[in-house]
Length: 187
Picture (cartoon, rainbow, N blue to C red):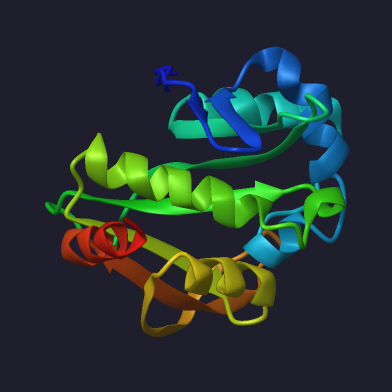
């Protein structure tokens, strides 16, 4: 397993830092919740050992950050980049995230996503950033909309989830030029 180092990033309320194997208990605490993973297509974690394996095999092998709530010091989610398999040979990444249900509805994921959008275009120098979500994942769709992504369309029967069901996938993206416009508008 290749370990990808990620820098610590901050927002007003969050610290985004590299995952550690010792985070397995905190990941399991929120990832075992059946309201969290299935919306994104992954099964609730069955054990702390499974969470440790996810950290080792997925999070540490990719550009993935643990989301820490500054106020409580609690690990509350994950956010990161994967290869954008729909855009080979393009400077592009796909963004993905998950968040503890205890922190839903507070703008936490929007805040973390905006920080990673900035990182994607300012540091990684991407030309495009994509994000995909399921038709029924309204919370994720709201985050995507608030962050300024453009809806590209829906791929029918494009994503096989943990239980074998095949779902539609809503595709969104942000071009470098769109990011620059959003950045200029915020100044």
